[in-house]
Image 1 (spheres, rainbow, N blue to C red):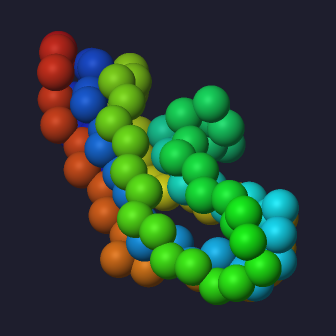
Image 2 (cartoon, rainbow, N blue to C red):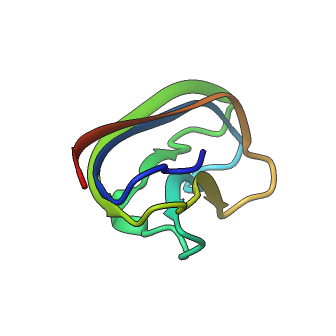
Length: 98
């Protein structure tokens, strides 16, 4: 999603995450703004606590500054390639612009 005007934005995002059947693995969803690597502190996390496949819905809302024409997109990180992300969503709402 491209931000049309510089300013402060409320960014809401989330996904359905399926964990692997391996204990102690982590997966997260975060946002990249303007091509900068997603910040881990902004992420929403899912951890596998049992040796079974599980599905979770996870979401987070943050406020960040973006320049005009910055692209806001989701990025994912996992400790095990068996994580699956589905029903992904991203909402960007202006708070203060101009």
